[in-house]
Length: 228
Image (tube, rainbow, N blue to C red; front, side, top):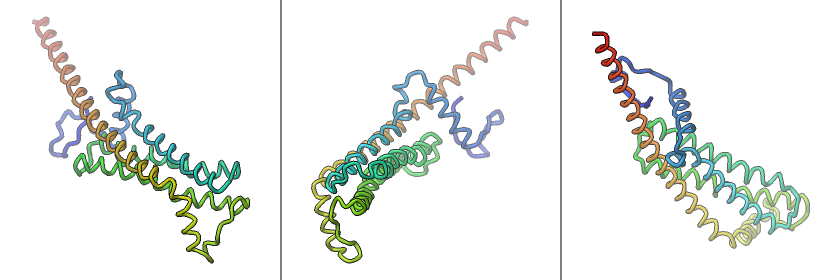
């Protein structure tokens, strides 16, 4: 069965009306069971790919600040959880809810490019900006607690804190810029593929539905002819 949105006055009498969540669950079932996975790879694996990229960026950023502040094994779990695990999960969930949902339900009011830009912005914010902001704070907290690096007081010497942050962050600025641009572009590309593959999937479902209706009509005509 192919799903489609329609105005109340345009709904056919024999149409099956379902809720938004039911339509979403049905379409996800079709996608997950689609025989040729290559035809729906972006819809099935896109969020996972974006989550993995966010996690990789988080690992790199967190490792950099931990190394610079000589943390060793101090606070390893406590820093990796918010800077690696949470961005990975959030980027996957955000893409599913804010991007894929609109693609599958076809309820996005903007242009296709607007949705791609949204996907790139969300991925850049969660995959790079979030760990970039959080990592130095987390590493500094444990460095102060375990006396691994002398840090100026943020209340008494805010300028010195800023200078130290700039000194620590400067070596990875080019990498962060490339990661931000790369993740945004890849997210936009995956969203484009999701749009195209979802449209092709919808067309194939409509074609299969038409073939089934034609076969049913032929069977009815054959049965009527046999009854004469």
